Image 1 (cartoon, rainbow, N blue to C red):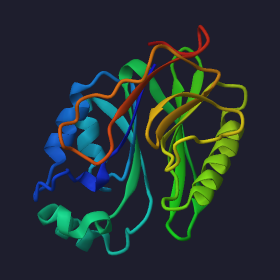
Image 2 (cartoon, rainbow, N blue to C red; image 1 turned 180 degrees about the horizontal axis):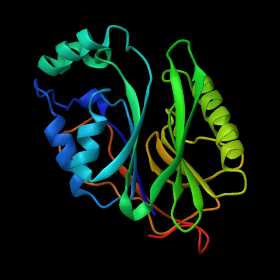
Image 3 (tube, rainbow, N blue to C red; image 1 turned 90 degrees about the vertical axis):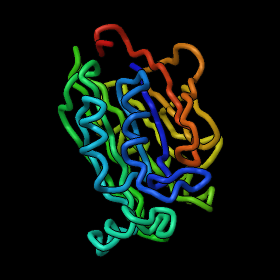
Image 4 (cartoon, one colour; image 1 turned 120 degrees about the horizontal axis):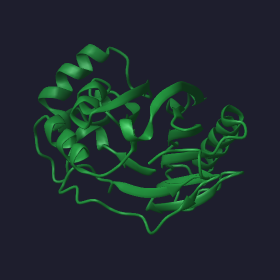
Length: 230
């Protein structure tokens, strides 16, 4: 299974583009070879369009700065670089058909302060069951980020039971420690960790031009035979 993690920088580019970049992000995602995409800092109204472009199912959770979302959306669509992260935030998981259908979707609130942080996960029905979770840990505090990672790992293991599980996303630390999980690959603060998976090859960094301030990372994760197809 090829798993992508990417922080979308609230739909912005570097240098700033000064316009709505949803079509460009959708085209980039649609053109890369992945089975499951874990996305952070997603404008909350984007996941349905991204899923359609990628021929995928989507599951979304809201994170921080989503009060008066209609107003934020109106401003963000016209001046995304002006409003920045105040345009609202979400995490999204996209699953292409090759990875199977989504059999379950769960979420856990990790913290309310200083910013709302949520971990969510999907169970994939493809020749068995495996769980894939998406995390955006607290920024500007390695201690808080590590606490978010550890709690997300504990909850994911409880959801997964004996099934293999992947925990990916923007961890906001360069060497995350998640009890029960092993590192499969990453770049900077963006990582994929696994329990019951092994990495096949080195992480891939697809060309993303100037979209986002994070590089997308793709890890090929192999599960035990019979657990997953693809």
